[in-house]
Picture 1 (cartoon, helix red, strand yellow):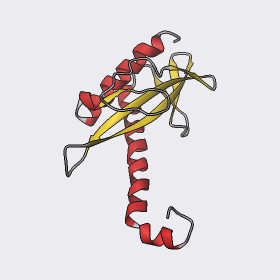
Picture 2 (cartoon, rainbow, N blue to C red):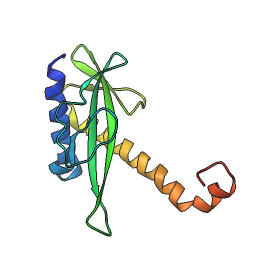
Picture 3 (cartoon, rainbow, N blue to C red):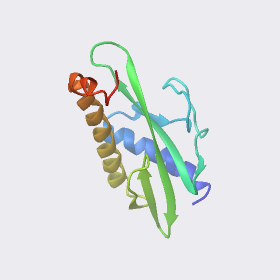
Picture 4 (spheres, helix red, strand yellow):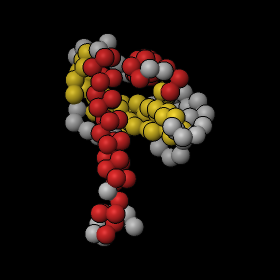
Length: 138
């Protein structure tokens, strides 16, 4: 897939935006370091990492109480296998999709986002419990 991975990255961003209900809340991100949603990173973060093609994506979530937002970044790590692609979301278990099977890919990304936010919500809801045990944040 080589150079066509960048085209694939743009298509993933567009399809994920559609799946999440707003194409303007998904964009390509830098591979690492600080980032914000106002900056257009274009293909800056695309490249190879550990022998796999990295597609860093950021998703913008508006705050419910004010006009601010939170931007969340994750990486897709991809390898081409015949006419399909093996993908892992932020180091998770790899899964296989056909090149144009965006709905399945978006569903996997959505499941990753739900899991990440559920994990964070657990800490918010249980902060007195894990702080008193000295195993969590203080």
